[in-house]
Length: 222
Image (cartoon, rainbow, N blue to C red; front, top):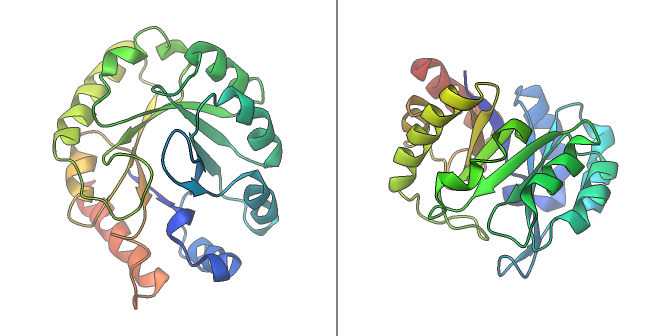
């Protein structure tokens, strides 16, 4: 069954606590934080202070996606701010195995995020340190980009790799996860859906209605 994770970069930042209360009432599963440093991607967004400020307002897991160079510099502060899951990009200046151990030292779930063109072989020697893989279905940095169709095949191939090597690893998908693409992502092996402007935060549409639509798609794909 797919899990719904609103991407808070896409929320109404001026009414963020209200948004979270409404999304909690609609029973989403987790919240996704895009942490950007302006170097790994040409954008700057969110940070540990926001995680810390929102932590008292919900008991749902916080998923921090570090789109940063040298992510080891950020892991401690993100963990202490209240994250439950942290993913680092394989393409960043990172010692992957060390970073995953650093995340797990806080008893958090450790993930690796992969850009659309990054091959799955980068996971070969860290599968025993992983809790989830975040497959980027757009190039990271900005909301509202077009879904890259070839990533569906990548999700399917990743699912096969996980079944062979470590069935405990979950697959997260992030990037224009629209209502049209949700059934296809799920059928190819995705389990955690990062939902932004193409499925949840739709202008003029109540958040509760958006969540119901996504849940109905998940149930039908079940």
